Length: 333
Ligand code: NAI
Figure 1: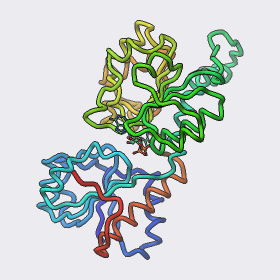
Figure 2 (figure 1 turned 120 degrees about the horizontal axis):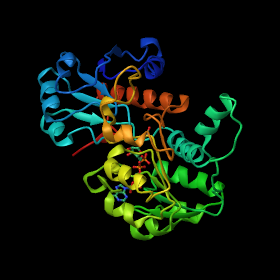
Figure 3 (figure 1 turned 90 degrees about the vertical axis):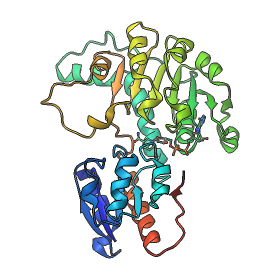
Figure 4 (figure 1 turned 180 degrees about the vertical axis):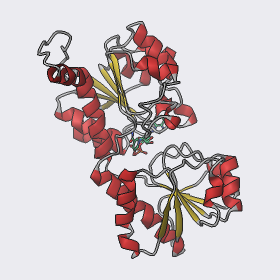
């Protein structure tokens, strides 16, 4: 099928071409650098399939233009789908598929990597040593062993993170609309109310999807309920945290630190080299000034295994659509 791949980056192009086995699957991939939005949707004219990622904005206006141009399938090459208006797609007769699972380890391991790097001050230590400064002052961290880790959202990624934290010897608290029973048996995680998790956790790691109910889950009110030493880790979606409230709490030393792979206004920033530009986002600029904040630009999924899994499932979804087969990973409003 003719596929218009939007918001393409070098790191994924290779994986998609490899999954297309040199065209043997019969798909024709056209790579576009711009994000898919109402302003760029015209580029997809004549493409029955558009393939999109986390920052493409498939609102009602973009979807109407896609439908007009003959698009019949939106293939998300990610798990989260908060950027697609599923009602509008349904009304326009455009089907939507996603990649619900691809190496949950990639994200869970990055979450733990961020936590360790922030807690043990690894970026600061690395820069000091490279500069010939071998002093240890200001680099004191804490043992994770014996600490209480609160996992919010214990689906595939949250469960993988829980198992890693179990390996560190942490006490585990969980919060999820649907407690993961096998995970309780395996790790001893105790499901508690959000308030109790906030009150007891030394580390809080977010792994719930972004929905209306989870938007700004960590807001000013929640930040008053957590331990003053807590480290908050977010590798899920930026808007789970009210970034201004987080910045305010950090400034007031109300929390111990934040390790973030996602940011609520990341769409126009992340995945781009803006090192020659003046950063216009004042909240992000302020967050970057705190010594107890560590930010990566949405790279938790960036492992060979995850990229291969994403590409394979994405093209598998499209092949099934072309063959008129049932779409196992279809999203409906
Ligand atoms: P999943 O669907 O396996 O797990 C999500 C869990 O959240 C489920 O157990 C569900 O019951 C729970 N949940 C949903 N709504 C809830 C609510 N309102 N209250 C309490 N619990 C609720 O999803 P998975 O694969 O673990 O992914 C989690 C999120 O991670 C994705 O939605 C995505 O936003 C993010 N992600 C981030 C990546 C990155 O590179 N930073 C890459 C992949 C995913």
